[in-house]
Length: 129
Image (cartoon, rainbow, N blue to C red; front, side):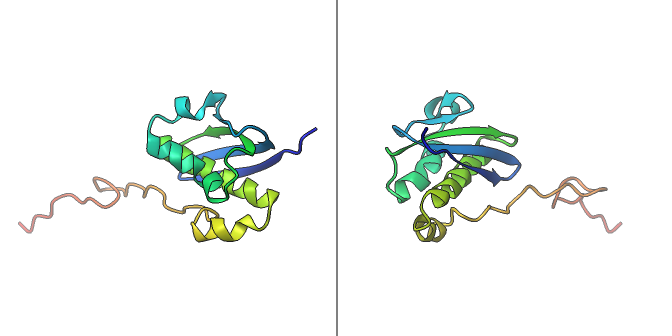
């Protein structure tokens, strides 16, 4: 049986469980094709980025289960998972992926709304009198 490499990718509130198997290069996200799951071209290119950087586009089939967050966060989570899987396959990919910033989990999250105020940063209008 072919070897399966799996890793977890995260971005914002999305978590993606990614599996790479030697195959034709098809990408499946939540049992749908990548073109069906991600509506925008930019999101599709984000998902394919680690494979293109390491020139392994047609060599591995990607299966991902992703939940939580929105479309953009989910695409980032899948990308992070794929990058982690590729490093498990070949350690020499680490330098290329790290230089492109794909190995680090993006820490940017939505800031919480503060009590007694309108939002995270927005304040109610100040009145001196």
